[in-house]
Image (cartoon, rainbow, N blue to C red; front, side, top):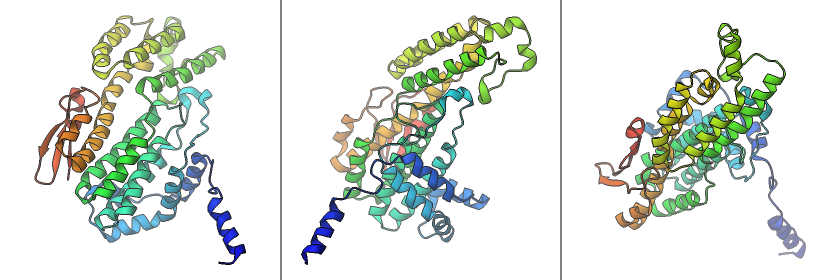
Length: 363
């Protein structure tokens, strides 16, 4: 090889990627512009994606329609930094413009992975599964996860887990080992208490600014308070009990920082006290009323994520590997049962509302 060509080749190899250090959110914004609206039929195809057959012409057309967007989407998931630049000064009026398109793209990506694995293209399928998991971590800016973003993260992660469970028998040992490696290196989601602390840091200053400007008491676009209700001075004064709300935020954060079973044992008393102090805790009830139920419902996500890790270890190492993957909620081991199509893992206990989510079949 001529010396000049060799030097050029070395320069190319040693050069940093064009996107090195780029903000993934900026790339995702470009992807959003490439998205096209889905028809009712395309919505149906996407909803029933896990049951789709390989080579389905309608599925193929749907994926080709979004091929350019998905190609750029996958590249963005490989970037480490993602900062959406949200204006947190808007408090509870904050607009999460990125959640809907991110959820759509992630679901299209898992449908493509499902088609690929059923067509024998294991490498392409694994790349899309992994990109879907990475995308779930990009939904929120690092260290600034809000509750709506946290919910979207859980939904995206759950879709990948369900697709992988559905396609599990199609994954060979190299594919499973690669997925396992990515699961271990994936940045963890923020904890629920960290998310609630971020909500507090955003909501309290926003409410104080509203009050200082003499704005009518409001909980933002998420929940409006009736004007006739607020016209009573005594009620208006209680609605503006921001210091009490701040204290109640901190109390609930401390409770939800405990192990899940301990936290769930303490939340009923916390909410009973809010209800008992009818007027002095009015703002706290309005802002925090749904947090406990949301926390309880979200417990299924870490359980199912751990189930996926356990299932891969089971396939690669045998049943004894299950001892390394206790259920995050109870600390107990998953129950294992063979099924006609594969096997099933069951969480020994979950809150009643999540009971149906404590069982996952890998087939």
